[in-house]
Image 1 (cartoon, rainbow over the protein chains, first blue to last red):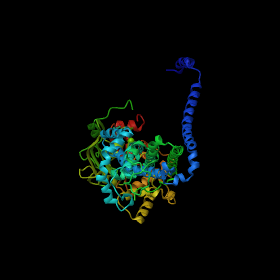
Image 2 (cartoon, each protein chain N blue to C red):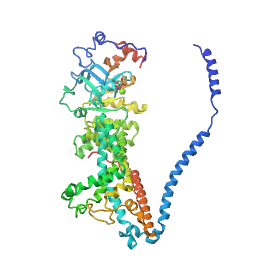
Image 3 (cartoon, helix red, strand yellow):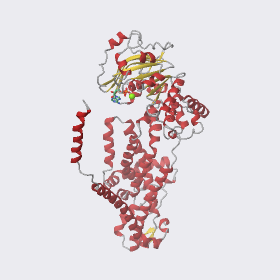
Image 4 (cartoon, rainbow over the protein chains, first blue to last red):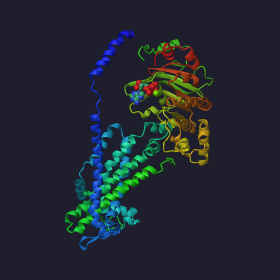
Length: 329
Length: 289
Ligand SMILES: Nc1ncnc2c1ncn2[C@@H]1O[C@H](COP(=O)(O)OP(=O)(O)O)[C@@H](O)[C@H]1O
Ligand SMILES: [Mg+2]
């Protein structure tokens, strides 16, 4: 095989290939780029628009009630008294409590799915947890009213009173099941799937090399999970929790059905409460006066603000949080 | 790997290797001639390892002399890593893997039913191809993590062990002022030496290294190789390498694996200068692999 023989056909082939190719065109490229840019700007504009609408809609309420709107705890539309504090309190407490219930369950499930479960069991369980997310909120609310609520005063409340009753959170009368605890449990169920599936992805992204490093030192499975997997993944898991919290803050339907919708701040979690989202959903249709309506829009603005602030705080924590600590002690 | 001769049947290995009677022979497991020690640190007999249907290591019998460096060479996919990992039962983490045969570590059967694999791994440490310090731990914590896993709490003792292990890994002078910094802030070569320090801190009897320099630059490679010469005063080292030059530089004896079988095992110089097997010769002269 000499090169002379090879050269000629190769050259002509190259020529004919080049001749058949279209001249380079950038028009599709340009179109694609503008299209994507347009969509990104659209999403951004939507956020700004919603924020601005809430802001301008709430203007008259802000003028009328001032900053005191955030700190007053009286909500009496008939007397024209509007204070959002009970809703802020209810939203934060029910969401954080829900998050506290959901996180251990979700992370435990994720660890089970990635580290412990035999292969054949992983898909079915992952599928079932994700199915939880597909249950419509209102159905979950109905389930809670008919199945869960009757059980609370009978089993859970007395148990909590007996074990944690020294805390003001778990004192007071327990005759009604409509309560902050009921809302928190429902919220926990609703945010469980997202925290589980995000945590699972995070744990799956931990390199096997990390696990082997720990196994190679003679770590047991639990020790491997602790020093190699969880410490590697803790930032990501925190991120998953924040995603869940974001959902929790805005959760409306099922919460409205079980929280009792009482605009009061009660120390006891056995007492009913109210959330920002619930009061809007519940009362907007019957808001007859302008003040009432404006106050509800202002509540919407507060909810928007709370969500944004919490997400920003979480981002800051993730960025500057010091994670360079020994994991075994 | 196309025109290599078919794997030789074991019988011919025996037949042509009367001098190297430590391999596939009735008194298998004896150390190679170079070793002055009477007993091998690791004595592997008739080891077979499967991944599902795949027979990855076939009837390997090998004695590894104590306080020396033993290299395992061979083309990729020939079962080097698999064999190495069965020496500390790390291959068991792979679902579907099976092993049969016997492996004695200083006389103890590593696969006896009562033996806990975590205990085996505390006696047989491992350094991996890619450095893998724990990213959330400081340099010092990375070194002592094995000790702390074993319940050592005494801070003074941990500090002492940190310095000792880092000195053994020839890293002390470079990091002694930065012990609190994260382990992953070091350079690639330093990270690998940190992993060596982490492994030696628990004072294992044997140190396994799977291509420990393949991700390192030449200078870092030289450092790690020099380190092996130091470490073998205290530890028995088994290293898998794809570099024959590395084997000649660091190893006292070398085992050549091919298609899952141990083809030849001899003092390094003898194996490279005077291979007894045609496959070994073909491999070291670069005709395949
Ligand atoms: N996890 C695994 N599952 C199935 N087969 C594997 C696995 N790991 C390795 N093998 C197979 O076992 C053989 C030996 O692999 P390995 O020990 O990694 O070779 P080497 O380290 O010599 O390159 C190869 O044919 C490889 O394909
Ligand atoms: Mg390998």
